[in-house]
Image (tube, rainbow, N blue to C red; front, side, top):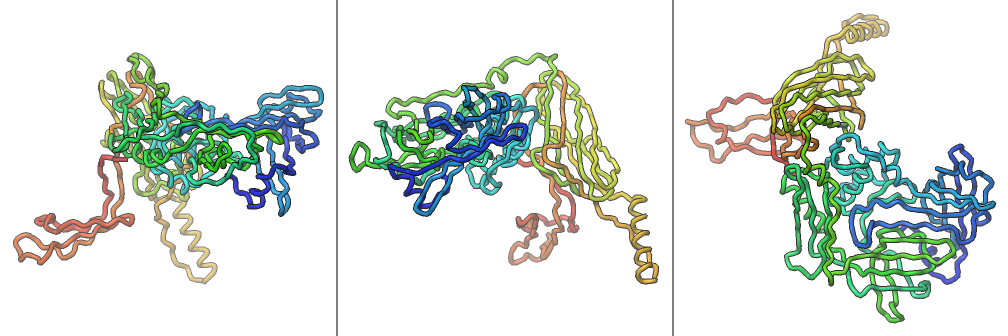
Amino acid sequence: MYSVSEAYREAIKRNYRRCSLRGSVETGSGTVIPVSDRNVAEGSVSVSSQCVNRSDFEYGAVYCGELDMSIRTSIDRYSLYGAKIALWFQIETDEGLEEVPLGVYFAEDVQRNGDWAEIKAYDAMSYLDVEVQEDIVGTPYELLSFICEKCGLELAQEEERILELPNGDRLLSIHASRVDKYRDAVAYIAMLLTCFACMDREGKLAVRQFAVDTDVQIGRNIRSKTTISDFRTYYDGMKARFIQDKVYKTYGIAKEMPEGGLTLDLGDVPIVQGLEGAKREILEAMFEVVKEVDYTPYSVDYNGNPAIDLGDMVLIENINGTSEDIRSIVTHIEWNYRNKSTIKAVGGNPKIKAVKENANKQLDNLEASINEKELVIHSYTNASALTVGSSEQTIITFHFATIADTHPVFLATVPLSMDTDGNVAFRYYVDGVQGDVLRQYLPEGDHFLTFMNHFAVEKDKRIMLQVTAATEYQDSAARRQAASIQALENFAGTGTYAPVETDKSVPAAGIARGTIRAVLYAQGMAGAAAWDGTITAAETIGEMPLRALQMAGTAAAPRAAHVPLKRQGISAAVPARELRGLPLPTVSAGASCSTENAG
């Protein structure tokens, strides 16, 4: 529920209320039309929205909110197309005037009726109807931020809030061959977070969970019609289909002691890859929320309260004139200014065990035979900003499969900003084996590098191609000149000339989010490759002091000595007996490892 005062809560419950409307309509040319009760047709303003797509409970709905209104204006209807509309509801309380924002909308359909312009407008959710053109990998926050930037939207939540949600720290992947539009991508992300997506009252994209605590009461005195279902909607299990070996495989989870509830079917989820254990962990995190879902579907016609949000938990008091109350969620809102409004919750009936299968939009693409002569193109961009230093950092990753002997061609453009001059080295790795190294000297400032490569791959292989970047110190005339100038400035200030050592610091290169453009294309590649669950990680490990080691052939130590390893706040210990007979150097090196990722 939108944050309001206690005075508002009391005023909105009354049978008689003094309320008004204010707002503005801003056309594309910059003309602003003030909105008030004086130029709005009586009973014409309504706002409708919902957080499920069908007549059942679900996660991942990405529904477009709608505004209808008739306004008296002399501006022609064509100038009103695309106009930005912002409205506020105002109510007189015991403490003065208080207002609630109704949201931000954009005119899509305008009809002229005499002096009145009848406007149908929608919120900015339609901005997400853009085709996915590149593959991106990242956490839910990184992906949502990237999508908002791509589609001209703003994300409502900070990263910390997203991380608190179930699966908020999972690594997800959006492939253009599996996800049609960014709106679909947001739906899949919201689903895994056990949320729905909506535009908030400021016009920002938000992912929102269903509330578990009651925040508003709907009293009998403000209701005109109440319909209550004779069943509860609750769940004993859930299932989803995740990609494995280029086809979808069903995964399920259920209560140990079923209670006669429904099974929530998530359908196909193409943005989850990795090991089977990781997929089950995702379902388990979601099921911790799903098994708490328990509400009674209803429909209520009442005086209206624009502060109620989708997903709120409401208390409907005094059902059928009795003392019985029910708690339920809000899945649909139709708010009408100075007219009857409706809120309701839809849900499945466990008594008939209705389990609906979602449409499989990717099955034809994944199971169809692929022509070996078809040109397949994979694209990639970075979902988060990168800072490249002396240690190798992976900046581009492609996973692909072959159905014939082929020679893929790789092409990439990498914009970067150097804080000082030096070399940038790019290294190719095919399945962890280093190939070519490209090295380029760059002065301080902004640059972009374009490079390409090609290599041979045999039939029926699954390949991981990676490109890493690292910066290197390079002696240069610019650095020597800077040292000479500094020495002269010191001489001018002190009267004593002393040479200044040339700066030998390693430069840092910054790469902005979503600026890398990379493609991999060839005939004989499969259109979508399954990930095998392996991550190759590289990390620099600091010095490891070796103390109190007991070597073979000497007196036994009273207890095993340990070698403390410290990196990024993580400490580990290696028993000294494991090191007997080995030389004891001081280690300071870049270490790489290959590990099976459970996430």
